[in-house]
Image (cartoon, rainbow, N blue to C red; front, side, top):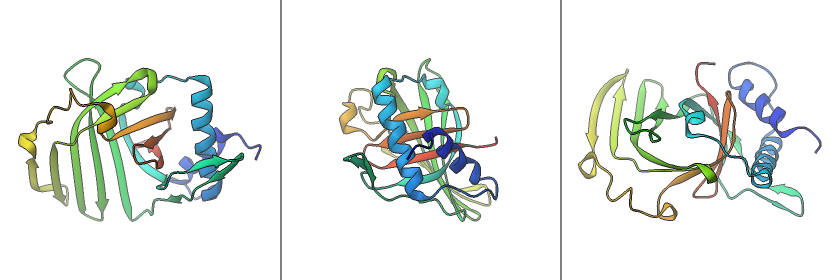
Length: 193
């Protein structure tokens, strides 16, 4: 496939907001894998601030997608419009740190998890720990509680390998792409473009 992987991912991102024809799931998985391989080869580094903002999940490949003999293996799918999955990274009070919010919305019901992050810039690796849970109905909180006292348990001291994380391999002003600790790939689109 000779198509530029950034163009494929950009078309997938644009298709979330428009009626434009979107690339096939196979094309998007291939583009994500090519972007990941390029980032490793070129040792691309993204600053934490490039992740700040709200991002809507557009596409995921939940299994461990990979190349085998130059062929992209792994299945992926576009997230249905009925389920709105979002992630947000916001600056923390401590310089160089951020807070994460992960949410899922079905109609007027929303589920949110929030917590602190740690970013290893040279590896584009963002580890996180959820410490707060919130359920909203019609944008009004019906349940709002911290767990583990609302504070991370030895989060700062834990090894990154023991924490959930995203390894970002492509960051643009319009979309971000990462592989999660579990091996899945994800493409998020900037909210409010």
